[in-house]
Structure formats: C-alpha cells, structure tokens
Length: 218
Length: 146
Image 1 (cartoon, each protein chain N blue to C red):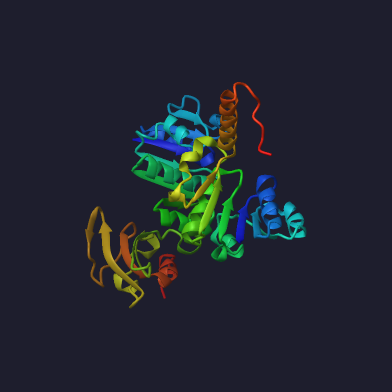
Image 2: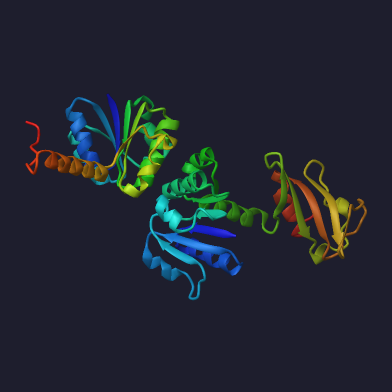
C-alpha cells in the first residue's frame, strides 16, 4: 500500500517505520528538515520537507497515487486542512487524522474525517486498566449498555460451576472454549483452569464480574 | 458593522484599529495575552483564545457578526476559522488572508471563504500595473493618483 504520512514526530516516525517494515511504500512529509533524523538508518521510504496542507507539497509526496493519508502533526488545524485536501482534491480513499483537542472533534466528524484522539484513547485505556483490568470487551451492544467479554478462567476457580457466575440481568455465561472446542455450557458444567469463557455483561456490572474472576464469588 | 478580526500584532491589529476608527464595532480574537490591554485601551473588544474552537467564536459574537476576517499568519488556521464562521455561525461575509501563495487555490467556498486577500499576489499585481503603465507612457514613471 502507498501511504503518505504527515508529521515526522514521535508518532509519525514510528508509524512510518512500522509501515515500511510491513512492506508499505511510505512517504513522510514534515515541515522541519531536522526531523528526518527521527527515521531509522536505512529507512526505505521517502522524506519530503514542506507544509503538508500545500497542494504542491502533497503532490511531490505522491499523493495522487497514495491509497492512504495519515495526518499526525501536533497542529489540529493543519491535520484538518491537510486531510480534507487529501480526500477532496486528491481523492485519497483512506484518510485518518490525529485529534489533540476534543473540542474540535465535531469539525472532523462534519467533514467526515476519521480521527484518532490522543486524549480520548488515553482516557479510555486508563479507565479500562483501572476498572476492567484484563476484561476487554469483544463486542458492545446498543450504546454500550451491554458488552460481550471473554476471559480465561484462573486456576483457583477450577471446579466452580457456570451457574455461580450467572447473575440475573447482570452477568450471563454464554459460551465456553476448552481445548480448542467451543460449546454452550449447562448451568451445572464445572469450569477448569485454562477454560476461556464468554460473558454477556451489563456495563455497570463489569466491576462485579472482575471481582468474580479475582475469586470473590459472593 | 459588526466585525470580528482574527490574529495578533501586525496586519490583523492594524486592520482592526482602522475599522474601529471608521466607526465599526470590532472584536479581535488572538491567542497572545500581551496585546489585550492595548486593544481594549484603543476601544476595541478583545477575546483571548483559539479562534478555531466554536466556543471562542461564539464568545466573540460570531452569531451576530456581519463580517469575519481570518487574518492570522497560518493558512490552516485561517481556513478552519473561515469554515466554522460560515458553517456554524452563518457569518454573511468571510474574508481570509493567504500567507503562502502556494495555498491560494484552497481558499474558496468549500472552506466558507467569500473573499481572499493575498498580500504577495496583491503586491505582484500592483507591480505589474506599474510596469504596464511604464511601457504605456514610454518609460515615464507612473504617478500615484492625486
């Protein structure tokens, strides 16, 4: 895939390196020539110095042939303008922009540009680590009121039965994977250490499920 | 007229002061707190903040403004502010400054820009006019209108 990345800071240079390692043809655009040194020695992609909102600079970076454009500068307005120019003027099929100030999110969504928000992503991840620990939702339903989570059954819960985890309107065991085979367990099925269990959980009960898995079955 | 001028020292401030002297109701939006006191002393309204954020524009009275001049030294800032002024606040006349001629083609209705001011393009056109006047009058120096 031909990828044009705007911004050669920590994130831009890391993404460029990763894309190139995975076989993409990468061009990095950066205002500051000195940032070229953030790219590793032997980097096989191209580096274009210039302002990424300027059509001539984007063209020099091969925007007309690019399949994807990623705007990662620290300047939200530069990211907005460059993304829209890439999409509307040069018809790049995949355009992604970084968003620093959550107050500006509505502008991006009005313009139909997919965003990756530093603040949003960090807050979500920290909340997950704080409250859900290892429980990563596989799927959310509705507006996130209900979630599907999978968890490995810790050894100290071996022998507990499925019905001990079920709480009406809060937690429901829906699936059990053991030794590579999946099935819908019965209430009386005893769990074994190493089983992977799928739960449907009300969002407000994630903490309770977490406590269960910590061994605090009430 | 109610006019909002975006930008700090230099061109934006001079434009704002000139319009104020001409009798317009002028509000300046700028990120630099250093200029605020001078502006207020001169009788202008001053709002400090990022103009590309809707709440700042609203605080500056964008809903009631007749004209908005996006006049900062950054082309991307001028474009995003123009877009918000037109789409969010329906400002009747949005004027934007081009800093880098290479970006001039971007300044159009798709960003909410009604009129473009490009100092370098303006300067070049004046020089061209002077040159044409020179050749018309066989080498005579063009005189400014009296």
